[in-house]
Image 1: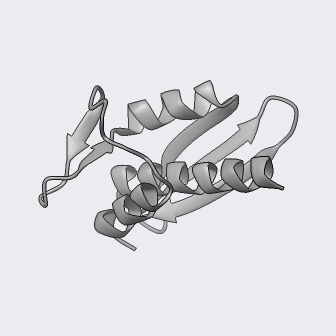
Image 2: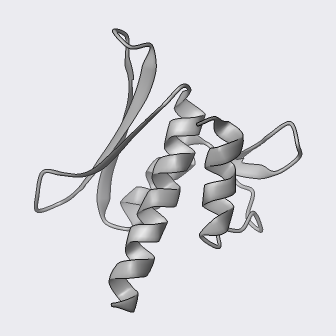
Length: 101
């Protein structure tokens, strides 16, 4: 997947880097939220969020759930940043579709 793809997906959801507090910058100059900021974004939306390294597969897995149930979503990636950013893009897409329908 790659960090660049994750950033593309996040920007495609309408995420904006107007507030760069807690952001990092990709080599192409685009700002993206750090894993800590992603955690704050999930918390603001009412979800528990975690990213952990899966040593067996040498990858990272992000998981999130709401306060009332088990796992709501999960994604995997090659780095913590890539995984966290992609997870945020998926959350934003889910929230957009649940409020539209």
